[in-house]
Length: 120
Image (cartoon, rainbow, N blue to C red; front, top):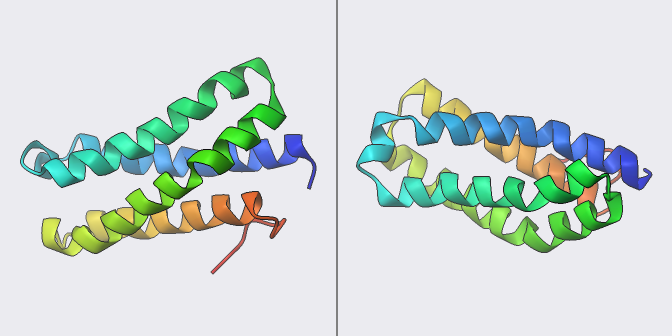
């Protein structure tokens, strides 16, 4: 997969991350849970770091930054998966966790060379 194609794929996947972030940020539970706030802030930070290179069309810088920040994105995702049952058992939270995991796994696959971005 060429750099431009990887950037397009990752950017598309991040639209799902953005929607999860928005859902979490505006949930009533976020008003009371600092850990949940940290999750959506970490998701935002990842996307913010990629915005400049995306807007300037610098695919190599985008991919470099995406790889550099991937560990924090995965850590935030894993943490959300861990705390989600404590926060709410509502289907919306369950589906947010599933959606986030799927999108982040696919971002990871694109960045680590799976090529098709369709990991487990």
